[in-house]
Length: 131
Image (cartoon, rainbow, N blue to C red):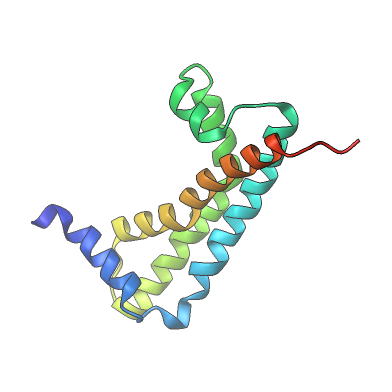
């Protein structure tokens, strides 16, 4: 099936071990995304906001503002993830697959941000407050 070919190629590239010289991106980019998610989730908990992913899904009125806010936090990390993957692809694969770069950037930058922002908010929201 040709429709799944980009997904299969991406999975094969990630799990093949050919990325070892540039493997820092698999650690660094999620860590940076988690850092920004921690800051935003902490702010959400302080202000009593709902969990980020939940608000994105359930609140169509505030969704555009939430997306803009999330993009300001993670946009640079996302762009760096795409550039890093493009460099990896040119060096290792001798070709550039834009869909693969986009998919890897989503996995390394956006997904950790979405997950950890809500987790941090939830943990801090339910944690006892200091006085």
